[in-house]
Length: 328
Image (tube, helix red, strand yellow):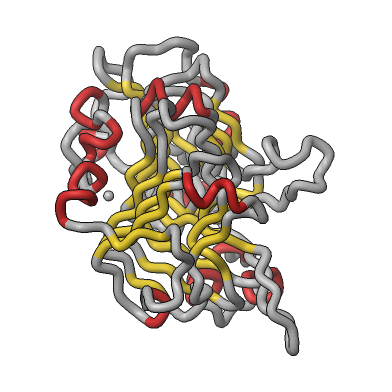
């Protein structure tokens, strides 16, 4: 997922605060039906079963205008009024049970510069599409059916036609964006990291690559109550820019995390300017004994600013979390 610096400042005034599960499989591992993530999502890629329709059933219309389809019996749910002063709803379902079959089509339908909270309610399934939320469409919520049931996937890389910046499967340039219960509190970020080749000590993947340009730039990544797993070996972060700032707190780390933890991207001058901190993390990958010298074991006082939504000015744009759609 990719967000511009302008988006981060406008929406958060500081940085992202993540409560997530992070999973880093290899390319082959990702598409195996036996992996923790792909095994759960594997069935979602299978064609839906064929249901014979009687003469009577074909004349029944779904409440949202579709012809009757048994796959639509449980979706969409009973929404609150479709359009209220505070909320608008855009429903996405790959089987045609709603107004939209793709996430991008629903985003495109959101009015520009809307002051409402616009909820894109996304049914279960893997949506193989590249999604962009432009700056002209603020206050959008992507609400899935569970991070193990709803996913957005694409396969661009830095070598794709538009390069690194536009390689994300989901790019958000608008302020006030919220994601719930979708793979990409309950978000799961999924990425591909290169494994350590047999007989070699080569690490090319990292959980983060934060691009903070100066110490006056009030941005960063804070991961709280997360879990990191997968295969291969990766860093927690690499210094993509000189003032990169990343914090992990109360995070379970598997042995996928390289013992040094962090990487200065072959520029030792950045060792003096990056801010890489860890606080009360657990697991085989959380051992600080062999961490790089510039990694910090944060104290209670140091970590405090990064542990709640005040780090992203959440009181200005985040409503209290509730499973009900109306609070989204």
